[in-house]
Amino acid sequence: MSYIPIFKDLEFYSAPESQIERYQNLVKSYVSEFGGKPNFISRAPGRVNLIGDHIDYCYFSVLPMAIEYDAIEAIGVEPTSTEETSRHIVVSNTNSRFATESIELPADGSVVTIDNSKNLWTNYYKCSLIVAHKFIIERYPHLLTGKTLKSINVVVDGNVPTGGGLSSSAALCVASTLGILRANGIKKVTKQDLTRITVVCEHYVGLNNGGMDQCASVCGEKNKVLFIEFTPKLQATPFSIPEVKLPFKPLSFLITNTLVTANKTESAPVNYNLRVVEVAVAAEFLAHINGLELTPDSNLQTGTLRGFMDSYFTEKLSKPQWDGRNIQVGIARLTELSNKLETWFDASEKIGLTTEHAASKLGLTVEQFTKKYLTQFPVRYTKLKIYQRAKHVFNESLRVLEVLQLFTDPESSQDSGKFLSEFGAIMNASQDSLRDLFNNSCDACDELNAVARSNGSIGSRITGAGFGGSLVHITTEDKLPGLITAVTEQYYKKRFPQITKEELSQAIVVTKPAVGGCIIDKV
Ligand code: NG1
Ligand code: MG
Image 1 (cartoon, helix red, strand yellow):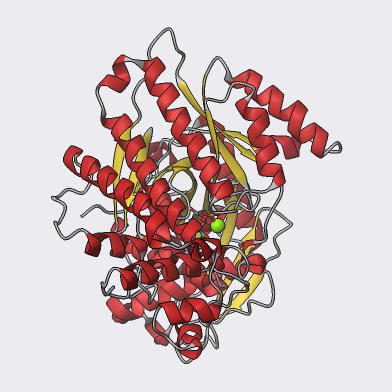
Image 2: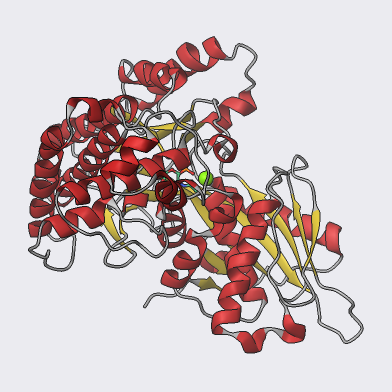
């Protein structure tokens, strides 16, 4: 069982030199806002997904890494007194774009509620309040003095670019949840618990997300990518990236934000949440025509494509899930499923299914179908493109295993040329699949991708939800400056002639795999 690290102070945490001033400024902001000093700092990073997009909510494994950009929070606990009339969480932000809010905790001990008609940054903080509060009620009820959580003051400073697929939201939710737990007297929290409870945070702002972001933010490790599995249980296994040898220069990761933001929660009914419905319907469809019954997942309340795969192939995989043999078996199974899709769908089903058609195919009435799939998170569509979505999910899951195989193959460190070209080809194939089968690319994504691919990127793909957002590119250190110049001149300056230096530096991010969430005790 591994616990969230608690560092005695900044020195023990070994914060990068460049970050020290940021921490000092955070504490200064706290002092000027609330008078006294904060009790501790909680922090959690954003993440970039190297490969495996839109498969986490199907319970297929993904390969992200935590990044060096994070949310840091200075937290001070108010003494509880007999005179107090109500308890408040005051959340402020060093960035004046994000207004301070004083959140009143319901006196009856119930969790706070969120008004999602208002698009406030503090809604994400409230998600953390809800999950942390529920966790304390369930596990540590004796810590709730005066029925509810303690009053705390918080100053947040985030440097994960927002709205760009780097999970500034997960960074905020994980750092906040961790901070609230500690402020309420929980001295030790396991990575598993923190992941499990934060995975559902954003469900409270209306997003039916999978668990990749929070797990990566909690479990990140320096210079390692994380192989995250969702079944039979949620776990993250760190893997090293093979060293690139001369004559090639070391591998670099570049992330570029298209600066096209799909407001995820507002457009969810036609993009993110709709995809979640489509893959769930695809899983039932495949189970139905194969005479299988899927056990609904308790979180999602539907079957999953991974659940379908595991019941279609009766021989169980040996453990651990990621050992060499299992990678081979996984690749063979996913290849078979992807090929079988061609015969499991007829020509009209390949185009898409109306609600009536999908319901009858699953042996449900339209009412039953609507209740099961279309009510919890409302969606809008004319046809469900379940063939395309399932094809992407199987192929993308296969690509995750192929990358893992490359990372674990000793030959990869021997023949860097082969390693780089194979890795790049897999990344590019992922992009093509996201664009053509999952339809979550956009003109800007395609344009930026094309510029990168013809200017030194070895492989480029959308990372995260897409529909805008960011691209992740792999390249080598010698090609990085040219790649950055090319995207600056041929994408950013062309599309956004008024773009400032500051905006550019937010949009173009070079990062390494970094450590996950932690507490810094003395400030
Ligand atoms: P982003 O776009 O980075 O927030 C979203 C989901 C992930 C995953 C990816 C697609 C949220 C909070 N996270 O990531 O769980 O499904 O899309 O792979 O929405
Ligand atoms: Mg997000």
